[in-house]
Length: 438
Image (cartoon, rainbow, N blue to C red; front, side, top):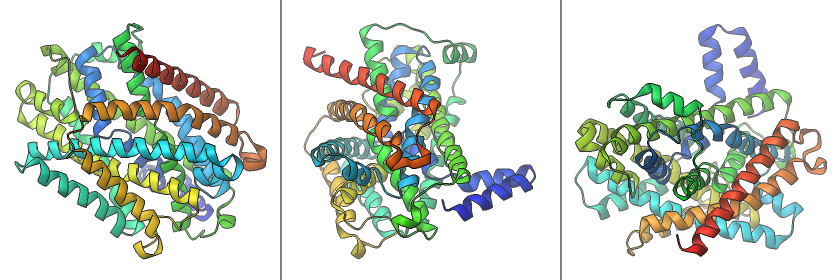
């Protein structure tokens, strides 16, 4: 967002009445909202459905607990991008050793491709529930559609489409009201933590943290902040460098809104699974489409179709973000022309990475690779990548040579380092579980 747009929104907000303020607020929703919505991708929906099915309402408090952690990290990513005028990979490559950068990018690309494969498989399975076409046909359709939209739509159209696709998350809000709920118990478990740390609950917490705070979201958030500035006419790094107080204010509003929306939808997914699957003794859900199938006899065909439709919508939102974040990171690393604002012939390597990541992910579904194992290994990779990457983010955001007068404040440092600690513990837990074979 350029200063002129930020100042314009600021003026509209203060001069307008209620509807004027609401309209001004809506104008600033962009990278933060889209990033938050993409966090509820089909693989995330599977994790959150499993949470409700296995533990009922008891882990709803986590959806509230993770909001400030997610806000802290995504705000830091956005602030770094707006202050430096570049994406994260370029900042890391400029100030740290190349092996550090290459290692992060390799693991990021690997984890993203696995996640893309699992998401495309979930979308195809959900598509079968809505229209009875073969799985292979749905897989081809979703693969071509996600690649085609990202490659051939111009940035303004694509950004608008992503904002519209965030509305698919409403499917999970509506589903909650289709089935009977114990609202009192749900609200108690949301605001009063149930602190039981047996192995199953601990590993589920690790899965939630790994799903909610993922490296691909860091890179996407930063790159989209840069894209927004380019779209406003700041086409050089020098023109983009630096962030005003007004821009900072509205960027934070966008990020906070996105993370709240993300976790609110997570809450609704857990509640739906808890009130139907858990209450009927169905405690194991292998994937998001399996959750939708299990809902059919318990909550009726309308609820299951809503759930399935949400999987398709969130997949169309999340898969391009997974592949796009990998493309931005590689383009920043090797200084390729990059950006969704460019046409295919202007950035062939950038769009090539998007196509390659999507096609390899789709091919996973044809090789007999178990999608649940794929998601498990993806979570391990994300869990391993996130802590060292977040340490780099914290070091960069506290470096006055890089950030000048936009280094972290006290609250950003406290919440940022707390997130690093929690994700580090999560990574260690994942490794211990893998070594122990549990």
